[in-house]
Length: 445
Ligand SMILES: Cc1cc2nc3c(=O)[nH]c(=O)nc-3n(C[C@H](O)[C@H](O)[C@H](O)COP(=O)(O)OP(=O)(O)OC[C@H]3O[C@@H](n4cnc5c(N)ncnc54)[C@H](O)[C@@H]3O)c2cc1C
View 1 (cartoon, protein in one colour):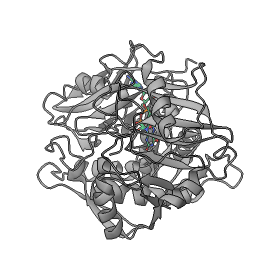
View 2 (tube, rainbow, N blue to C red):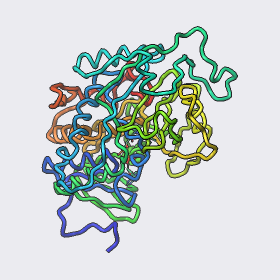
View 3 (spheres, helix red, strand yellow):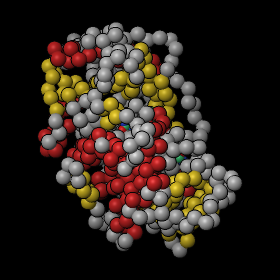
View 4 (cartoon, rainbow, N blue to C red):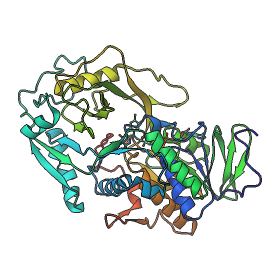
């Protein structure tokens, strides 16, 4: 039997989820638990081999919007209780959540974290203010002089401390943070949990058409010609989201669009003071425009905060792009070396080259579309791995209510975050919202 065959003895799905990344698998779990018959269709051979596999897996709660902060804080609790969230058997191998906390210097570039701290106070999120001495104890050899503004590597002023800016003298430690070291395994965990709840998965199956009948979606057609019918289809295809929206004839009518963006992460040997640290560290630094986290015992992984002095490499076709390292790798390494003078930079490049699916204001789209029955969870903008546990549930709520006749465009649904006792409006994630001016307009969210 071909791996793309649909078993005729199985009941037809209620919902086809295109994509089996971390968000598509979370949706499969939530919908299956709610009693829907789901089928995830993915072109790859296993769950989580798309952009999920490349994720840094950072779980943090400091965002520049209230809704972003609340969703991340609720999701954090589910990472803490991952086995319970999945209802996984005691012997199942689960992705580890390294509960490190996240240390963020307060700088003029991040407005001294004023919005983030306001939302943390509103939501009762624990945090501590650390002075420079405590930061030095935490990071070891560290240069806390200001190097802002963030500069390109070929700028003659690169690595010159800013004579008019004060050195960093305060950082905020957010305890409710950490990272998942194996994002693909976390995705597999969700897929296994969805299967236990009745969800089905079809791999090595590329969707090439979205079918419509009587003014609504009616299923998908695969590249090998197989037709699969369903009353609901959800686009959860990461960097392919705009191409799949185009197949459904939606996208041009949306106020917020999505595009694929090339991203590189740099892996370097950890300076001696950071090597072997348990459970590890995360440092997110807007003064040098980069962040790092522990990567195993011996390395650190560095990522960019996407500054305007850097070229943005937008990718029109995620099947045809240059996935080699570029100068971005080196730039990130040298930016972090300003802060960590002991950082050695070998000539051999290690890390990942991958694609973000970026929305116009770097806030995701979790919404219906103008085509009845066609929904989307996309534009995750390099920062929604952490929210995967809740994104499945909020999308399931949205689909259930819209299919029952609710007009979400006119009357945006509310969604309850039960662990933290809050509600968010799903209008925040609307495809038709105005650009959210509170957004950092970067991966920081
Ligand atoms: C380098 C990098 C670092 C990141 N770091 C963080 C971080 O530290 N913290 C954080 O919260 N987030 C982070 N993110 C973001 C996070 O990883 C993503 O938001 C998340 O993985 C997106 O999951 P997804 O399921 O939407 O997409 P994907 O994982 O890309 O899954 C989409 C799936 O759709 C499938 N697909 C596409 N087209 C078709 C088709 N036509 N037919 C069938 N299947 C199709 C693909 O095969 C793929 O499996 C990072 C992302 C990247 C790239």
